[in-house]
Each structure stands twice: as C-alpha cells, then as structure tokens.
Image (cartoon, rainbow, N blue to C red):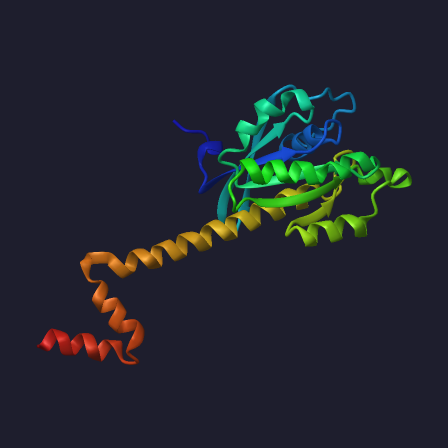
Length: 217
C-alpha cells in the first residue's frame, strides 16, 4: 500500500546551489521540516528532502537537492543537475564574496542543467540586515539582467522561505502544464490519421459545414 506522500500529480527536482555557508541546508530543512540548526555542518556531497504542496488543485511533490558548496565536491555535484527543473541560487547578504560567486554558479548551472530550468536568485540571511554587504537593488538588477526571479529570505526566522519555494514550484508547474496542453493540441492534429481535417478546420471560417459537406459526399 502506498502512503499519502506517494500520491502526487507532479514530481519536480529542484537543486540548491551557491557557496558553502550561505544557508542552503537550513533553507532545505526550514521548508521541508520547519527546522533550523545553528550548528549546521557543511554538507558533504549531496542530500535531499521532499515536501508536497498544492498548486491549482494539483499536488506537487518537490524533491529538493542540497548540493555541497565546497570546491572539492563540485565534480560530484555537477552530475546532480541532471533532471532538475528548478534551481535556487543562494548567496549570503552579509558576505559580498558569496554574491560575487553567483555569476560562476550561474554559468555552471547553465552548462550542466536543462536549458529551460527555472532559476531563482535567493539572498539568504536577511535577518542580518545590520551586516548587509549586498544591496537589494544590486541583486534585483542582476536578476533582471539574467532572466532570474529574485527574493530575500531568512532560514533563521522563516522570512520568505515558504514564499520562495512556493513561487518557484508554481512557476515550474505553469510551464510544465502549458507544455502538456501544447503537446496535447499537437497530438490532436494527427489523431486518427486525419491531419487534413484539422488543417481545413483551422483555415476555414465554417469548419463544421466543411466537414459535413465532405461526409455527405
């Protein structure tokens, strides 16, 4: 017997990437288990957790992968981009170097991931506003220039964590469901081996009369 967690309409793989220490693991644990660990150790290799949400009446199961940020693990983690439909590119708003490295992470992501992957830039640790080193406007401008969505979060106090994951999963769902509709429409055109009828219908202002005429003949 399957558990309730096994019942879902869509399964989306999302990866968390960014420098070590920016809070990727705590974003993952806050969203999937509503937990935060101040003593969180650096992730070694890769780990993942799941959580299901509702979008437009559909159950979306998110499989979220936390990829280690340390350089020595990059050869391992690059393989885990495969199959990902979404990515949260995370930096620490209090450490400008982690923001500077976003460009390199973005290049790696685009080198290894699917061209249509949905990417969100996440400025984490927004609770450290007194130590802010990355202006919000600067990060927003970078996001717009590179076609990314953008949000600032705090895994510590939960600010915008739920919103960030909900937004990226909803965006992925809308893209996937629209593609399914388009694919379905394309299938309709060749169903029953009668593509000609569809061609006539799409160009003739009175498709019903045309098809009736053909039947009478």
